[in-house]
Structures are given as C-alpha cells and as structure tokens.
Length: 585
Ligand code: PEP
Ligand code: MG
Image (cartoon, rainbow, N blue to C red; front, side, top):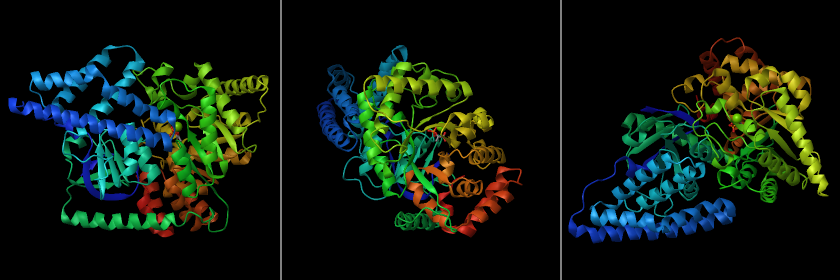
C-alpha cells in the first residue's frame, strides 16, 4: 500500500503499464561485437515506428483539436530527423558498444546538462520535446506495451512520473482504467485527463516508478489517494467489489445526464463544466452540463511556441463557445504561474514560492500587449453570440485596485475594437475569489463585478497555507475544514444578499460531501469536471434545500475537519449511499 494525493475519485484494478520504466532501470550491458549491426537495425526500426506514430498523431490532433496543438508533433518529427541526434546514438552503439536504450538515456542526460546551462528560456522549454521524442524511441526498443498501439487491450493502469502532452493525447485511444503518477499535482496533465474522463487517479506517489513494474497487478483507490501493488486475495476481493460498484455507478449515471438539474423540492440548479479545450467542451455537453463555468485558457498558451495573435485567439474562443452546451461560457484570462510556466512570457522557473509569486493577472499586468490581445480576442468571440452568453473572468484578484485596473484595461480594449469599426457588445465581467484577501473584502469587491466565482482549490491552499500539490502537506489542504466553510459561507451570503451571481468552480463543487454543504449555504451555481455532472444531478435529486440547510447547521457547530468529514460521510450514506465512492479525502 502506498500513499499519494487523491486526484480523481473511484476505484480501479488493472495491469500496470509503466511509461518511463526504461529510464528508471536502463540496461547498461555492453554489446558483443556480433550484436552491433542488429542493435543499429533495432534503432532504425524504432525511428521508423516513431516517425509513423508522430505523423499519425499530428494528423489526429490536427483533425480533432487544431492545427496549433498538432504543431508540437511537427517539432517532434524534426527532432527525430535531426542529424546530430542520430549520429551520436549511432556512434555510441558502434564505438562504445552501448545498447540503443542506454545510448538514448545518455543523450537525455547530455541534453539535460546542456539545457541547464543556457539562460534561454525558450530552449529550456524544448527539453521537454526532446525528452518526449527520446521516450517514444525508447518505448519501441523495449518490450513494454506502447499506449498508442492497438495491441493494448484490457484494463490498464498507467504509471508514469508525469504524463507528457503526447502521451496524454495517445491515451485517448487506450482502455485506461486508472492513472498513477510520481509527480504530485492536482493540475497536472494526468490529473486533468483523469477527471475529465472519470478515471480513478492518484498522484504524488513517492518512488512509484521503482516499486511498480509493467505487468504488476495494481489497485488505484482514487477516494483515499492510495495504491496497492500486487494485493493479496482478501484485499483484491474487497477492491473488486468497490470497482464493480464504481463501474455500475458510472454506467447508471451516464444515463441520467438528461435529467433536470434540480433538488428534490424542485429548486433549479445550474451545473456547469470546467474545460480546457474543444474536446472537453463537447464532453461537457455529453455529460449534461448546462454551460461552461470555467474555461481555463492556459492550455492554449502551453501548446503554443509564442503568444497566439488576436485573430487566432478569436477563432479558438469562437470555436470553443460554439462547441459548448448552450453556447454559454465563462472564459478565464490566462492563469499561468504556480506549477505551469510559459517561457515566452518571460516566466522565471526559479521563483522560491511560485504559487505566491508571479502568477495570473500579476503576470498579465506586466505584459500589456499580450493581455490586451487576449481580452480583445475574448470580446470579439463573445460578440458573435447572444449578449450575456459569454463572460470574461479574472483569476487571482487580490485587491480593489487590481479590479479597477482590470476595468480600465477592458474599457481600452472596447475603444480599440470600436476604433477599428467593429461592433462589439458589453460582456459580463467576473472575478475569482481564490485569495483570502478578496474573500475578506468581498463586500467592496462585488461592487466592481457582474459575477463572482470561487476558486476553492486555491482558496483552500492559501487559507491553510498548504501547497495544493505538495504531498507532504496535502493533509492540510482540507476543503471541509471549518475555517474554509466559514469563509465560503460568508462570501456566498454577501453575494446572495447583494444579488451578485455566484458560482463555485473549484473541485469542491463536484464532490458529494462539499456539494451538500454548498447547497445548504445557498449556492445554486456549480462548475465542475464534466464527468461529475451526472453524479451531482443524482445527488441533488435526493435532497431538499431545507435538508441541506439542516446538515450545514449541524456541521457549522463542529470544530475539526475530521468531525465534518465523518458526519458528512454518514449523510451521503443516508441520502445517496452509492455516491460515496465518488468522494475523496
Ligand atoms: C481554483 O483555484 O479552484 C480554480 C478553479 O482554478 P485553478 O484550479 O485553475 O487554479
Ligand atoms: Mg485557481
């Protein structure tokens, strides 16, 4: 049994497929003279196979996502063709009798050292691409399964340090039942993919790449953030039962998606989705969300090599809105920083406290060109749809002055667009409440916005002073802590009293225990990973608002998170017992 962070709920059992296995234990045995020619041939075959895969991926991503997202695979093909890269490998095989896998491992080491010495941030970012290509080549040299090959069938549990973008895309083809990563992050590619596809996942499992081998039997318990390697018979039987319940529940919930979103006493609810791109927007529709409460624009920037121009952003936003349920979308401006960096925005990789540092609008303010471009792209796209359907939202707002400055930037963007003779409409402007200072100042802040959305993931980490991605302090990142509940209740009360629409768009919104409490606090709009919409619909249908208020009243008397959590687990057991499996610690 090993512990990590619960990043996507549910229980899964399957065969481990370790993506980076080759890099953890490279085989360093020297080749015999007679083996050199065959080794060179294997390397060439691996190159050919990688080239075929990359071309296929480029075409697939271009068709399904877009030209720019596909360009990453064009870059990978260029790396694969690079003469210096291939000559080094060939030389090491021939002259130093290294096997091809060990040669690739050494090449990666050389690149890592080289990139560490350069100050060019763009070049540093490219290391990830080189790494990705080397891993791809290696996967064709070892006998491990390859996730983007049709040969993989059955329940797989993917184990990786962290999923690279190309691996994440490739997983779309494979029957993955669970994901386990060594790097710990709620916001990693792995976590986001797992949640949007409803796959149980655990992140931040220390040394998992050393402990698990491809072929091991693995249990992933995404409720408690633990995994079990080669479990004994009793344990396996208990987890099998839980897994069956989870799978049955998912099937049953999928058929619920057309149910109205309302409580047992018919109070209508707004259940929206959090998305990162077009595939999620389509998924949100499929899961029965009524709109998009949070479109995280970070991925647009992370998949580009330079700031996308206004025309391109306009087109991307317009396509996302068109693909979203009811064309209703809240677009959040860039929230880079923390664990995500964009080199071309001059982001410093060495900040001591990145989550408390140069992040979100703090960075956008210092890049007026880029920020204005994004805002104009959003206004233009919104203007193609009925007024009010598309909204703009600013992350990490900390002070009243920032809000005033944001208003001024918006006014300037409107003037520029109108100066060009374009007809644009006023779009609702919202702020995220995710910094405690904004929660404290909410009475003043609401006067400057049309709506509020609580980013509970950040609000919890900042209130508890516990990095949300650090497994060592994850026990303190407690959404159900009385401190968090008191702050949330106050923000919701103020907004409701002032009639300012309020949503919670952090992970809390989609978790059964927290959902009941938020409902009791008077929240009626929730935005969550699309996969959670059907379960929250089901839960809402079993409870009246008065019952939720009574549960909240009892909970607000507790002094510890453990008391709240225990009491809420009992309430979920009473109201909708099957849904407990979808909650996490
Ligand atoms: C949040 O902080 O709750 C939120 C929704 O934003 P993100 O997870 O993207 O930081
Ligand atoms: Mg946030």
